[in-house]
Length: 185
Image (cartoon, rainbow, N blue to C red; front, side):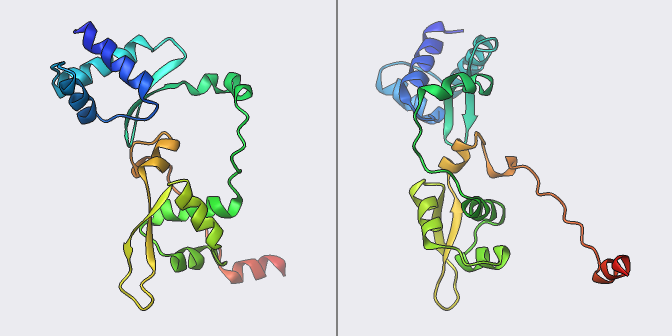
């Protein structure tokens, strides 16, 4: 194991402040005269994961690459350090992003059909500003509505590598209307 490469990767992840892909690490090292194959970088990341196994830090593989982060177990200790003034996510916004995540690509009309209420422009704008969704194209129907999909930032914020890691939707149990009436009578 090349300990210099391990330490260089650790420094890179620590200093980047964002996830970094394997290929990006390789390019950074090549530009600085450090020779490293992708397999060596991956082995070094695995070594770092083992090194941090019994600490408060972990190497996390998310959609945009690898990053160093504090383990979830220790997040309560840190909450008092930040005066997070970011607006809370409303129930309507949570429903909207959930529909986009599970049914993508979707139009605003698709979201309204599923939710049964109008989707506010503010909700879509908020998701676009957070960079949780993006316009992936336009549906070929009159009005050419925008098709929305989730972004890598959305996955990164949820600590997911890809959209298939979202939990399964719960099954809806439908009851026949006559069963409800028979129970009432």
